[in-house]
Length: 315
Ligand SMILES: Cc1cc2nc3c(=O)[nH]c(=O)nc-3n(C[C@H](O)[C@H](O)[C@H](O)COP(=O)(O)OP(=O)(O)OC[C@H]3O[C@@H](n4cnc5c(N)ncnc54)[C@H](O)[C@@H]3O)c2cc1C
Image 1 (cartoon, rainbow, N blue to C red):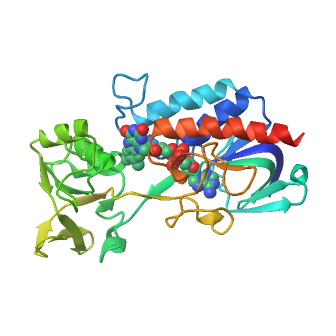
Image 2: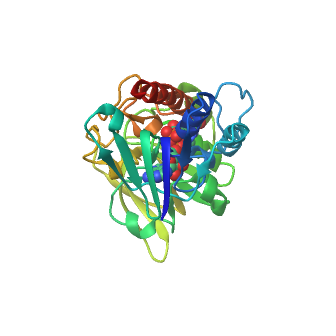
Image 3: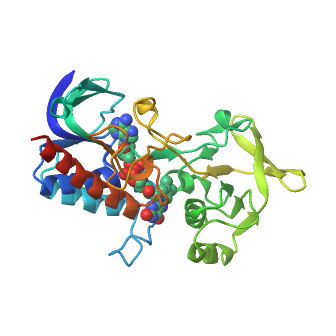
């Protein structure tokens, strides 16, 4: 078990965690970042980003995060990769100046004066019949990772938001046909993405539709689609399905410790302060009206600024 003591612990090395880290470094705080996998966060699997200021030509999620990681290296920011924080408790309460937090993972224990939770989110699933059976065997959550497996094949994207449409536009590079199944009669994606998708001849939209069940043998073969207005069911032969129906926050390990909304997103104020003084949350894991790289980075900057102020006020 590795044991550390630090002024500030940042949990998660996605855009919000690294945004926080750059601001914490500039504030000369004693801190480090713990990351469950490798630094970068969920955006690293995205083939193109066209809405991050300063990158007028589409930049891949991987390249964008590499440049942020390089920026962190300039400040000698310590990122402990392959370490997950799984529990948190208040070590000593009483006078505010005595309050410390202890965070534990499988082989790490960190005692910190303040914490920024930047653990982001993971894809939400459909939870329909057959889904469990075919995840990794026809059902995927990552077009960049698995899209090339479907060269000249027919695939289906589930969802109608920005991510679904963006990933469908990536899949047309490989697939002969991309169905987009959306439960409403119009897309939620921004208009510029919609225009691109409507102009793409390989894409066919199935509106007012939801997945009823997945079926197949050793791998996924068919998807039963139900029209929500008529209840009519149609079986489509399909080679691969990509699900983009929203996200769920990576906050399970904090249940009961911090105030959250009904879906588990952490409630903060505009300083990113949570219901526990000294603990901040930033990015996709918190209740926020927009979950994007730009807002995650910005949340991180705000959280680090106020974590610094919190620690200063303890002196
Ligand atoms: C397919 C796709 C396309 C997207 N396209 C765009 C786009 O074009 N433009 C845009 O602005 N945004 C886009 N987004 C949204 C963007 O990726 C997120 O808003 C952003 O990554 C949120 O950053 P974050 O740091 O809050 O969380 P994340 O990126 O999720 O990073 C959280 C990090 O915390 C780590 N972690 C989780 N739990 C723990 C734990 N217990 N201990 C330690 N570490 C932990 C995770 O491994 C992860 O690295 C897209 C998202 C997806 C999935």
